[in-house]
Image (cartoon, rainbow, N blue to C red; front, side, top):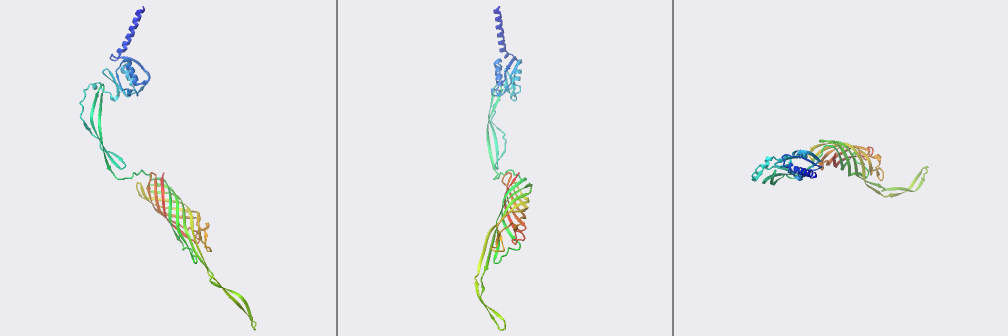
Length: 424
């Protein structure tokens, strides 16, 4: 009894083994297949190992694609491959007894594999892409590419592969445009601020002339006027308006010369006195005199000092560009300011010896009004920065000193200024 059962078991085992081997020989076998999460090339290799299905694929490409775990029962090979390739850019095509896996746009029809090899083409010239213009620091470079097909190689296997070997010659034609400055794109409008330094040449006008001294003179000589400033405002197209704050120090030389004379005369002195009585009763007095010569004495006064008047300026200004280019502009400018005295030092003339005295607060005007007009240039040196030289003629309204003081002096200035403007 045991022998027939053993024979039946061996026959069933042999039949099962042979059935798996014959699945690949059937036209469209039904298979059961399962695989854990892995790359697609591993799954296809397992499919070949279990059912000896001829699947052609690129291992390098399939190894980059990962699939989730998969399991099926009694499905056709096409359905299994469709499931495994689902969601990828790849598909398959059955050519003879082989399944070929390629990207969808690269699949070829089965009939393409049976085409006869084409005759090797002769060398041909492909129409080049002409006149490619490249700007390089002021030069125009024209590039002509001529591509020549040297040989076409056709390889035939299950899939037709075409490979072209090309030779490319590039010709450069350079046209020199001359020397140019690569000016950046500048900012010309908007809010701005300007810091500046100023030097001035002063002129003094004396109402009624300089004070006169007997046997002497008083004079003033311009020395140095310098200042710093900060302007802020808004520029729109050609017009600029704003406020200005500055500090200006006015310096000039005070010169005084005076000569005093004393003596050069005789002084009488009474040595004795006597009188004579006349009979008529009159008495006549007689004096015995002596004279003394007082020699001439000369005293010279010469004094030199540097007077300084320091002012804080607060004012308004407006400017208009009468020339406006991409990186340069020229403008006219006018403004007015209130000048507030903040410091003073030096000397003035006095009526008595030594004929000079230090300046006191009561002698100087504490507030003055001034106005100016002039021309300026602006040269772009960076995206938001201008270099701005200017020249102004400035006049002061009223004297530097109080009107009740004899040293009445008005000031005029040729003002030279250099500034930097920054646009926000």
